[in-house]
Image (cartoon, rainbow, N blue to C red):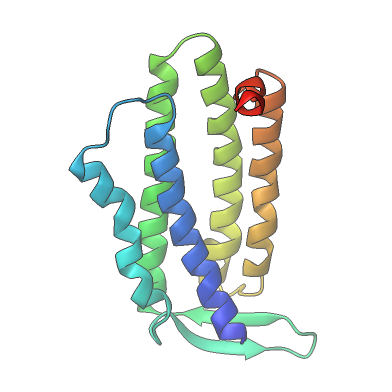
Length: 171
């Protein structure tokens, strides 16, 4: 059960990376996606079998105080590299969009960019980097870090009106 949970945490990281890349392509863009962008967003799902393979988690130890530590295998390193690449791509796309926009759109992109920077840094530390150094009980903190992003996005909606809530209410 613990191994399955750890596998799902890493799958969640890949899914989140793809979803954030899709979001970064979509925000303030009305033109259709190119085939290359569609493939780039779908690529992490091809690595799903690695997440659930025996090469992902090599060793799993549950201590007396119910802390779980694991040792990542070759697939763990491949997935780590892919996730880091995707998160950097998300931040690069948002940064470029922020530079091209002015006014309210630039402010909204700045809020999203910095909330993602903080959330991604914390997610990578707890789900990927610390387990590489043998501190393997922290991936369970990963999902709670998304509250940072949710809180910052909520602030961006309310303060500079990231989304016009009146449009949603009218529909």
